[in-house]
Image 1 (cartoon, helix red, strand yellow):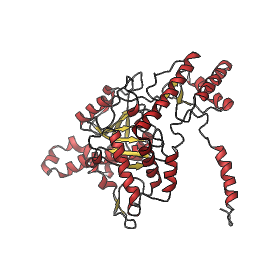
Image 2 (cartoon, one colour):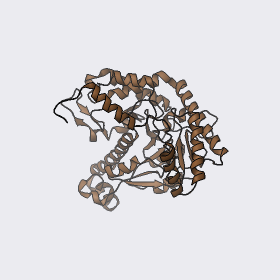
Image 3 (cartoon, helix red, strand yellow):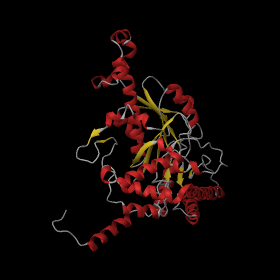
Image 4 (spheres, rainbow, N blue to C red):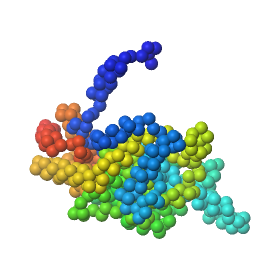
Length: 426
């Protein structure tokens, strides 16, 4: 930092330089985020000074957050949205971390405390049968005990972070040819140290939805929580027309679902960062909140029980504004427009001989054009020679296109022309 500050004009000249280095989403078909809705931007600016981590100072923002959770629970087919429990987060990664943390805490509370409360005779008679479980609550024996989470191989990379943060094993279940988790594989990976299950509604690579109803049956049978990562698909699948062949049930109408992560800053058209974590009701957290709840004597609240302390009320206001403004009808139209773009790209690619690797269910399209080396080479040339930001999948060598509202049909036409040039020259 310089000793003497610069005038505002100089600062904004510098900011303009930095801004030119950032994308304006032109020629971007790799991102699951998009340009936020104008009403979300205005709401964000109006509440930019607010901190929902200090709720006593910002009653209005807190009230909006409650309403956002209720609207989201309704979107997720909750039978009584007012009884849902949750809060806004920075996005899917934070939501997944918190959901898994509560799974772990519930497991430890249930198994370790139950063993501690058992009478001495039962403990003595069952030492060998319970020693691993009892070690779960004893940090001195942590090396002798490893909790695990069962999830699809296609789960978001945030779970790799979670495994490290929470010291749990990730047991990755196999997926079928359509990139949906196989329930039998999930079932086979569960043991006495399993803290919960994860399903995906709109996986990152292909946009596919796992068979949530089948996962729910397993969760109920095994008495395990089931978290649904719907960070991208949560604002898409509920608005897909009934003409699709994909079942759209992934929310609280599925009895085994205990929590859902959904990101307004993706297909919800809110600002970045804005995620939502919703639980069926607060009772799920009874055994867990006490473990992360801390006294906050210098704030207006007595306790704080979210992962982050300070977090922006502006994101709450932006999300509230855009959800209220668009309504179900508005989101339905936005999704329809994105699906129209997806089908347009699919048609254009088929005209030059490329079919989708998996028939797109939502606005993500993948095309397999060769091995990993060729795929990465084509992707690199599209960027360096023509300025296109395209991603690639890792489970198979395929180009991946995300059709967000900032994409136009004219851009799609130009992209396919450039893709053919690159392929012909390769």
